[in-house]
Image 1 (spheres, rainbow, N blue to C red):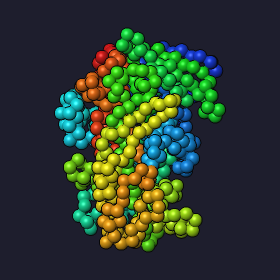
Image 2: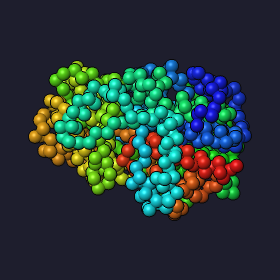
Image 3: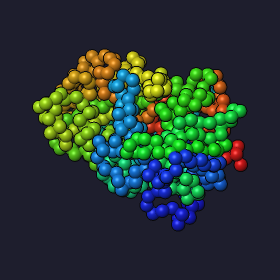
Image 4: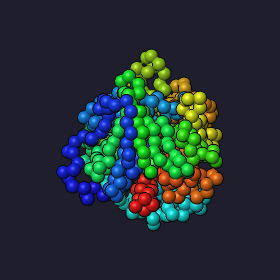
Length: 521
C-alpha cells in the first residue's frame, strides 16, 4: 500500500515518463526482470506490486503522456488527446462507440471513476463453470478492501449528487425502485463534471496519480508513445518484447526498442491484448484468443424538463438502480449521467437544422438516464489484413433486454417530471407521454446501425479458466501455453458481469501480481 512509500520519493505533481521526444537513439535494448504492456488499471497495479517486491520493471504505454495540467476539460479535444482511435473506435457495423483510454494511465484517466465489487454471484459462477475455485468471495475480499483504501473508493457524498440525479431519485421513489448511491475512486471531488475529459485537479484517483507514481518510487521506468509489436518467447517461455517508439506528431517510428525480461505482463486491454497475441502467434492454439468479447452496450433516454436543470456538474454518476441487473432478473443496470454539450448532441436524435438547434437550445433542461445491459459474450476481436476488427452486434435477446431497460428509464424520467423523452435512433423518435412508452419501445426492431450505442467496458477476449482447451489464461493469470506470460486486464473476465468492471480489474491485478511474485522470488 502507498503508506509504505516515503513521501519524498513521490513527486508532488507530474510523473517521470520517457517520451518519444526524449529518445535520441534509433535502437534501444533494455534488460529487466519484468516488462508490463500497458499502464492502465491492470498494468499500473502489476508494475507497482512487482517493483515493490524488488523487481526491475519497465512499463510500455502505446499512448502519450498527457500531464493533468494539459487536460482541456473539453470532451472533443480530450478524445483526440486521450482516447483510442481519437474517440472513433467502434465495432465493425459502426453503431457501437467503444471508448477506451489510450494514454499513460489508460482508461482510468477518462472513466467516470465508478466502482463496484464483483458480486459473489459471478465469483461463484466462475468457480463452477470455469474452474476458478481460487477466486472465492473470501479470497477476493482483502483485494477489494486494499484497492478501496488505496484509491479512496467510497460512496458519493450528498453534495456530490448532480441536479439531474436529484430529480431521478424522486422518480425512483415514486415508482418504488431501489436507489443505489454510486461509489467512486475520488478524493475531494471538485464537482466540475469533466471525468470523461480527464481530471485536471487530480481528484480522480486514476493510475496516473496513484499506482504509477508509486511504481516509479520503487524503481519502475515508464515509456510512453511505445507500441509493442511482438511478444517474444523461446521454448514455451516468454523472454521479452519488441516495440516501436512513435513520434506523436509525425506518427513515424523514431526508435525500435527491445526489452529482455523473463516475465511479461500483458495489460494492453481487451481489444489490443488479443490482437498482440495474434500478431505474436502465441497462446492461441485453441483459437480462443479474441473470442468471447462483451462490452456492456448502453443506450440513453434523455428527458426534457420545463425548468433549467443544469445537469452538468457534480458526480458523473450519482446513483444507479440494479434491481434487474442479475441474469434472470432482467440483466440491465440503470445509471444517471451528467452530460456536456458534445455528449448531449449525440445521445439523442432530434433531427437536423432548426429541430437540432431547438433541441440544443434547451440543453440546460435535459437529464439523461442510461441503460447498461449485461450482454452475452458473443463478439470477436481480430487482426485481419492489417486492420483491427471488432465483430460484435447486439443480438435479439440482448436487444429485448435493452428495450426493457429503456421502458424503465422512460418511466423514471416521467415520474421525475420530464415532459418529453428522446431515444437515439437513426430517425427522430420521441415519447410525449407515459402512456406511449410501451407502444413506442415495443415497436423498435433490432436493426444494425439504427441505434447509437456507447460502450466503456470491453472485456472477455482472453478468458480466464482452468480448461486450456476453452480458455486462454490459467487461474493464476498465466497463459496456458506460454510460461511467464501473464495477463492482468479486463480481457481476463470469463463472463460479462453487468457492472462497471474497474474494481474487478484492480482486485484481479493485485491477486495475479501476488501469484507472479510467489512464482518468481
